[in-house]
Length: 339
Image 1 (tube, rainbow, N blue to C red):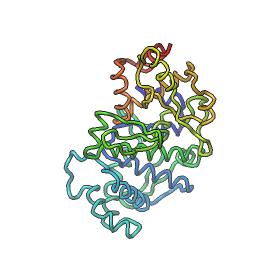
Image 2 (tube, helix red, strand yellow):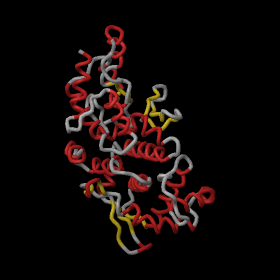
Image 3 (cartoon, rainbow, N blue to C red):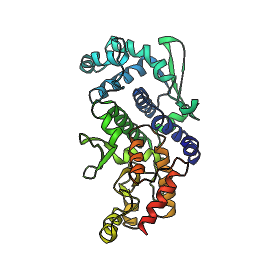
């Protein structure tokens, strides 16, 4: 499994946060709404928050995102009392007020403890994150949510902006996968890359989903794949073709390219712009390939459709193996095709 390996690489609260946000099956987007509110409050230095205040921020986050894409699978019919149905019906008035209506706030406070707060730290395999980011005390609506020192540290760290961007990207990807007509195309075809905007595109409708770097960097622990140093908001960044795209063009002219598409997500990695420029069109080192394999293995434990995009690349190249060494094997075969 990815979870132990991913955590062992950097056993700290930031990695626990990324495990909570980037992995696990998502049937609704509640975890992302709660995560965004937690980061916002912790960045302000808050240590205790009444449940009604947290619920109001959470409800407005859901309302804002509902306008762009569904926040749960549309395959299952919803009851009139479902939280998302209430949120949709109360959205216009809540936006006009700048706060949730009384009905929406009541629905949020009824649903948020059991629907998301009890589950936020849960991972696959009935495990939990090594660090916790909040705890609640009190009963019913009088609860107080206490933010932990671990949450305050990551929300006020140099990577805080990156964590917010990763969460937003993940939220966009999951929500779009629920959309009628778009979700099936993502499952069948995965993402394409628009290099003009450096965004992931849904291939069916050519709709921009989210930035390439924001979607991928969390699986690299927020670090440049080349130098392994953190990428901070002050840094200029680039998206590197780990195997240079020029190889496919150059070798294709000579003897026909025998490898997979080098312009696909599996071969792309966020880097510092200077690191990318220094690497230029040189082939990857063994260290680059080790980190790329580990990054792609982490993505494979993240639900559709980002995982699906990588699976399609493996299947197209006929290099898929049901083993823990799947990506090292794949990358060795690509390297052989470049020789």
